[in-house]
Image (cartoon, rainbow, N blue to C red; front, side, top):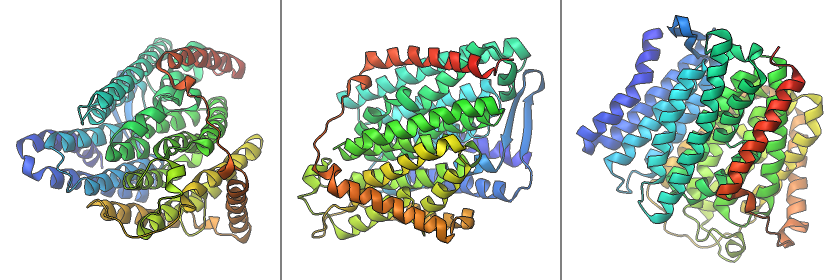
Length: 480
């Protein structure tokens, strides 16, 4: 299995360069890589114990492939394959597919890293590949959004790297477990880097512009999988100790409430999906032990919704209320929206039930409020009127079939969710959300301020978040 793991890690980078030599096979080679990743993830689910592989004994550089990481790897495989199907007839160049597969491989690497230095390398490579994909159209707007993303990403990694050095200075090792005895400033710097890169809480307010202004397939990649490259390391850090777990859970609750508050009142479809991504990341880290399954369901849903949003006649919800959409598109929208809202028969139901059962008692009320907020948010899609058929982008249905098929099959991961009590609670939560939307939210015209999303304000937020993390580390005693 060690040889298989090394081969699986290196294949995407090898194929990424081969695509340049064989441009006529770009789509086929890229798709083959996703099949390899999916097969590797399924193999991990069958393994009884985690696979551990030390790369540098003296520095604590190692990889760990386990079932938690398998959820993320499978998400990466399915989302990337769906985007390839979506782009099949779009005329994208070999450069696009090459960067997509290099991005795919670097993100896979983040999912098995168990130390801070190899994670740093993987995150930096993924950041560069994501930057190139965002800038792919070469328009002034896309170049600005890409450069903004690159600056924020590199700043986050600078903070992170300083924290990693402090951990090594304390333990002579980069392994994640070193956070337990590291100085509080090390924890603050590392967590700031991961929170910023992962789009968590106010540090994630760079995300709506980046995800909404990118091309449709790139938006699906960013929201479905790229953003999670920093989320799994946060989950692994949270599992190191209860004190670290508490800090991560606090940010999970705050992120879920903040993201859903913005999403409820957002009038632009892609920006609403981006804010919803922030909220759903909060759900993932609010219960670290089961975050993998939630990440899988969210990745499949959000990629579906971003791909569909690219085929809607308008990005403005007010205009969509008067522009009836294709019934088939509407059905796909409804299925995805019901899943993320936690409706039974779709994987989102099991993920939400499992997560809400795994949160700490003090998290229960705010997370249930966030669940109602999610139902309110996606009622916007469900209540869009249906009309005549419209021309659909080639490749869309293949992508949606793969993603929604995954949502249905993934139900088997947590069949214990299907109790009478859980079903009634889920349906009741969605019904309450829909009523609030129809009776109140739909009639309001509230525009939330965007000042915090501005470039200079984001830098200030980094400083405030760093201070807050430092005091949280001191208060919980994680440095002793």
